[in-house]
Image (cartoon, rainbow, N blue to C red; front, side):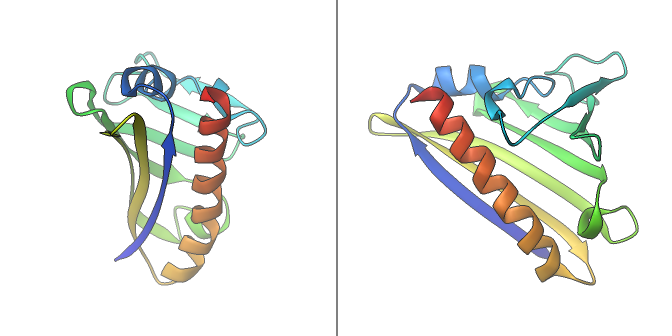
Length: 140
């Protein structure tokens, strides 16, 4: 099983970071990384089963939403290259927040199955890094 893991510390209260990142249908905080987000279906951005299409190519579904634990999970159902439906399966991304002294720690991880796990990790890790950097810049 392949894995990705990225983290960032943000000098902001956990509730403020959660409010910014937790709506599955709002990634306005990720300017320059997410150029388009299309809501698919009638589920709200904090309802399990909510669907979105990012940058016209990443099709994702919200699979878990735990505001009491400051975390949510989603699947990548289809996407470009190494995360295409034919190339990867059981792709689950997890965003989890925790407090550390006066900062919020944001962890963005994923697990998946693929014949080319390293290729998937090499593709996804820079995207997660860019998303976390964008989040930090938005809240700093």
